[in-house]
Length: 173
Image (cartoon, rainbow, N blue to C red; front, side, top):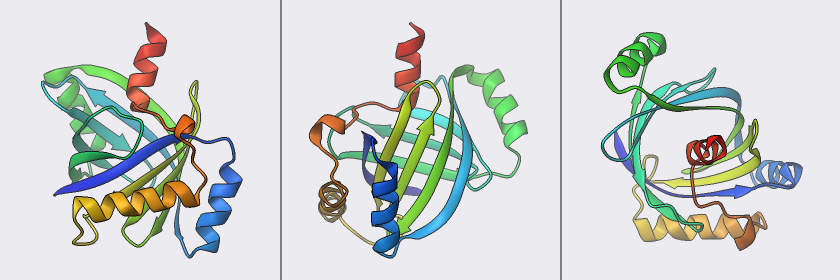
């Protein structure tokens, strides 16, 4: 399935504030997922296999690196045999980098929130306003994302331009 996200990633100094805000504003807590994202070498965009106790999918996405809300074109395929798929993709394309994280997952309507702990990188919050769950335009999704940036007290200085995979690759150089 193809869809559009308008999303941000930000450093998170106070996860308890974000958690409290979400729960006090009717967020549905989906659980805490221990995720391994294996990124593969591809010609365009990013291709990752997500393995977790809640979410398991092959995800291709393309987005620009910028600090504020950014559009991401996403294709998501739910999978059942992660091990077999990982082996085939590794043989075909090779592994670029592996990201491990502990992720709390919340939803308010069509907006998904993550509170992440990533070893060697720190704590982060993500907001993903998506038209996967609602027929909304890019402009409407951006307004939702902007609303929650302000509501959660995320400052411009906290915004992160790149993915966890980019940060880990940068650290390894």
